[in-house]
Image (tube, rainbow, N blue to C red):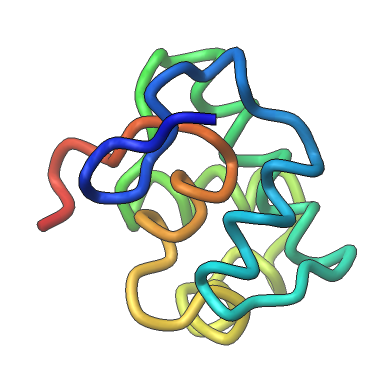
Length: 101
């Protein structure tokens, strides 16, 4: 797998669950079922809109897919500290969200 200078996959087709595990380890994360739920949400969002979500759309998509309790920025931050949209996109094999610094 080839990564760009920021650590995102160059070819999205190279992504699979094993690659996600490797990218998560690089982020010092161990993926649990809760992480995988969010990875599926962000990959579904990308399939629908052809872009990785920034924070507000990510919160909204998570709320719609997983319910009110998980559709909160505090929940996302607890699983993907720092910048959940960037970390999720990277681990999910998606491009960097366009409006994330």
